[in-house]
Length: 288
Image (cartoon, rainbow, N blue to C red; front, side, top):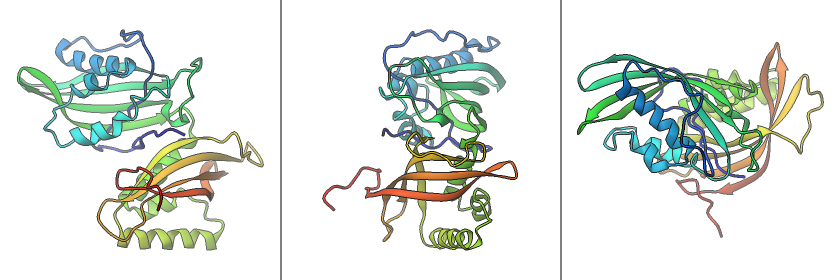
């Protein structure tokens, strides 16, 4: 199973956006893209990013970012995996609006759709890659060229709503927000619920773990008992402490079991099928 970067979450004003993967040889046009032409210079940045994604040109994509900005390394790390030849993705801009602009600074709001091509002969990507996002790019003119210096994700909508709860879960874990984290679980089994809460609070207090969902898709091997009330999601994720500690960095493979509780999806069981040791970059540590 191939890695897909995680940090695709419904959140206001975070310093990252949802990207998408790309593969193969693609048409360099952005057919279907509707970009505001009120400001051609700014529109060209938005349009150029989309072309770079659809053409699988990672260096071209990163060229739109200020390499001295605080987000550059994070964007480069998070987005590189999307420029993989494993999945066939399509990205388009629904609307682009310049919010304000001065001589050397600008803000542009972008509504963008990402989807896995259904007729692709390549592997279908995780369901959460099918989404619609709304974000703001902050730009600055550097050496005569507009560069992105910051980004803020305003909204993410998934085609498959099951992924809303999974990303709320991961986001809350990374933010150490125990109430938000526990709101993604079914509380009917009080013993299990309390154990999860206590274990997570212990981790929050002792470590600074970054949780990254690498893969998430509806399971084809494990079936739900009642498709109208519960479902099974195959997942892969890494748990890596961002500081040096005695924490065992690992990659976990397994299944999320979710059920509808009062009309909302809740996790009622996490089934782990494999755990492997990884280094700080998420690479498997062999022979250990």
